[in-house]
Length: 142
Ligand SMILES: Nc1ncnc2c1ncn2[C@@H]1O[C@H](COP(=O)(O)OP(=O)(O)OP(=O)(O)O)[C@@H](O)[C@H]1O
Ligand SMILES: [Mg+2]
View 1 (cartoon, rainbow, N blue to C red):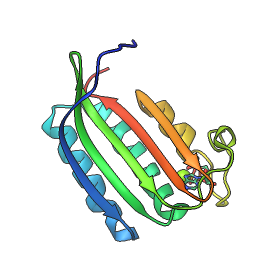
View 2: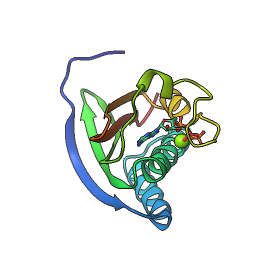
View 3: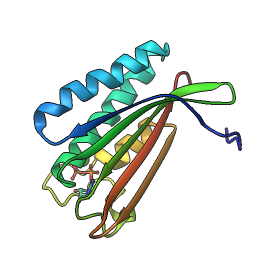
């Protein structure tokens, strides 16, 4: 369902991600917010799985950055928006990066396309030499 209603931020939290040991506390924080808004267990799992993929990409390819967690509402929906911002090398071909199996890191190449499938909304903005911002939304239910 699409709606033109504005998203309203009820709460936000920003974590700096610079090293591997920042990942678990970040995941735990995402989980806390998901539990706090009463997100369904299935959606919690999808959200946390996607959050892990994106935070690992930000560390591995973006050299670390900032992970924002927001509680948002839009109409009668409540959910979590995650924003990952890095000042790394950027992604030269986003369409290619979104293809199953494409990896420059000798990995599975499933992180981005898989995460898109797990979320309700998914957006990547990237400029070579400037950095990358990935934004995802998972609603509480549905
Ligand atoms: N924040 C980022 N900055 C620069 N490049 C990125 C970033 N995130 C992803 N990429 C590029 O997009 C490619 C695809 O990412 P994706 O997460 O789908 O796969 P992967 O990380 O290579 O493998 P997997 O996630 O399955 O372990 C990466 O190999 C990398 O080239
Ligand atoms: Mg990945």
